[in-house]
Length: 179
Image 1: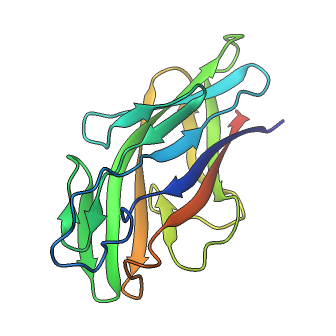
Image 2: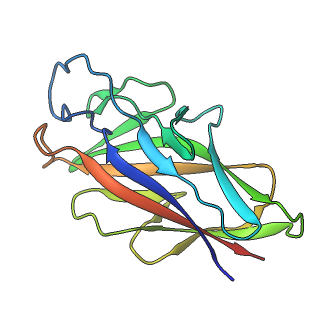
């Protein structure tokens, strides 16, 4: 039995209204990366901050946001959001926590899979070093139910992205399979 827990990354201002290639970024108040978790059966998942990751912003229930803040090739404004330059663009990296909960207290562990809800021809997404596609990929084989499990999110931003086309609209779907 599979439990599908989608986290929607909707209207993400990761590149923050497009100053990805700008030398002197304007002062912006970026929107957080919005995510939504849904429960199925006795399993549920909760997005949470990690000490070395981007903060989680809480919106209208059940929406949560991973707040990457303003990001450009020059760096990131938020603590624990990192930018690595590459010849073909840059990669934005941060960590987040995932808590798998079993209301029935029957499962000691689960397998976590992740995928993109739809293909994004511009950006490339990785979770824990696994490149995401529309086909679910295993990112953690024996995730303990209960404690916070830290994960790493990376988003590759190509050099072709300009301030006019830098909005990210993507959805990452996490599937939890009982072990």
